[in-house]
Every structure is written in C-alpha cells, then in structure tokens.
Length: 350
Image 1 (cartoon, rainbow, N blue to C red):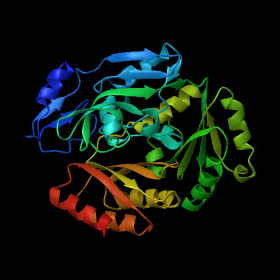
Image 2: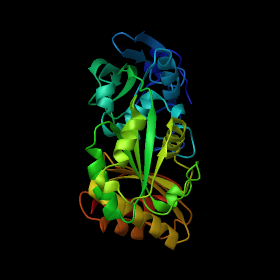
Image 3: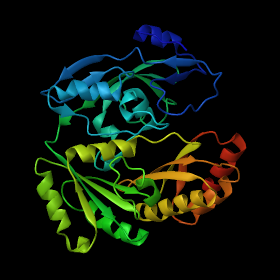
C-alpha cells in the first residue's frame, strides 16, 4: 500500500485501477490484489475560522480528530457516521465518509452536501478541480478523489436526551414515528429490532421493536418530558435517558458488530419496522442473528448478518420484497460468496 504524505505525491500515485482507502473502516469493495493508495498521512487541519463556522481539512483526517479540534471552540459537525465490523465510528476518515455518504442517526435533518459544500478533488481524468463537492459525495470515488474539504461547523448543543419507546407491533412503530418526527427539536429517530435491542450496552430490556428518539437542545430534559405527555404516548412504557446514557446508545447504534456479511437497505419509511421484524425472524429461523437498526427519518436500514449464510439469499430477498414499495439494497460486504451476492442483488433489482 502506498501512503503519500503530500498532495503532490498523492496526485502522482493516483493512477487508473488503484483503490483509494483511508481508515479501512468500511469493508473492501475490491479484490485484495488491487493496488491501494492510502490517505492516512493526509490528515491535517488546514484552516479553521470559528467566527465563520468553517473548517478546511485534508481527506485522511479521522472524524474523531475533527470533532476534538472543534470541541475547543464548543463547535461540532452534527453527524455520527456509522462503522462496520466492530470498528469505532470516529476512526473513519472524512474522505471515506463523504465518498460513501455515511450519515447515521443525526442525518435526519441535514446532509453532507450541506455540511461539506466545497473543496478540491482530482477528477477521473487526473485533473485537479475546485468548487462544489455535491456531485462527488456518495460516488465512492468514481467521479473524483477528494484532496481538500471545507466543512460547515455548528455550535454544540448544551444537552442531549433520549426517549426510548417499546412498541407493540410494526404498525404502532410507524404511527409513532410519523407523529414524533413532526415534533420540534427531535434530532433523530432510530428504529431498533427487538432482538437487536437486547444487545444494547445499558442492558435495557428488549421486549419489542424499539424507538429511540433523540433531543439535542439546552432544554432537552423539558422537551422530553413534553414528548412523554403527548396523547399518543399515554399508557406506553417509556424510558428517559440522560446525556451520557444517550451518547452510549447512539455510539452503540453506529458501531455495527462484526458478522458474516453486512448490508444496507433503502426503503419507504413506512415499511421499515415491518422489514426489521422480517429480517430478525428470518435469521432466527436459520440459526443466525441479524443486527438491524434503521434511521427512521431517512428510510435506511443498516444490518449485519451473523451465522449460517448457505441458502440465505433467496429467503432474505423474499423477506424484503414482501414488504413492497421502492425497496432496494445499496451494498453488501463480508463472507457471502460472489454467486450468492449476485443472486441477492438480482432479487432486489427484480
């Protein structure tokens, strides 16, 4: 692997067929024998203007390093992009995060196209470019490789609280999700499968599909109390989590465990709770486990399958397709064989 420490060295090493990588926090999408070019030494903060709320960095800097640099000024980037394979989300590089458009729970009300509006990159022909990054975000480097990124920072909220709701069935999940998303100051809504929630680090009971509703505000405690008074929540079992507890749960939801293979599913938000339940039941039926969490605000499921893979693609595809709507898989990684992957993707595209 080549690890250039200057942009000139990086540009010289960027040749057709090479795979650019940073933290390796996402699974490899190319064969092991493909030459790799690392951005890890391109990890500097180039400019920071707290007054204009802008930060310019190189693509190999970790997300955790960015947040730590901003914390000195009580600022942050309001995103928590997930990582797979048991890795820490903060170790991911900003270049890799933008290339994959990874958002996480806090992506309900913002996007990387808003938070990273401009920068510099090398296009697919090897020419240096400068300007808006919108067209390159989420393309996995196909339209260009980032060399400099300017981010919009925000004032860090004074408090965070989380309201945990235990639902009776997927239909109730959807009713609550739609109602709570419309409430002011709700920063994120996560839908967690019942079997998945049993693995939470606070050892909270996992009795059914769970909603985790987050509030980021100086009066977060009062806002959560008002949410609990909504007529639709009366008679429900709810738990209120303080800032440290909410932070641990949000970190757990974005630290995806190691497993046999991982995948993403984009789905109509009204179908997510039904699909989470189907995935967990299917896994249990073949002696496996499916860790499944969904961003309730944007309609994306993040899932990790652990256990037997043989014969899984057919039933897994049928489970998703049975939900209906514009459901499709965005990527797969892990130990599943090439033929099985192709079979599963074909079913999603059918």
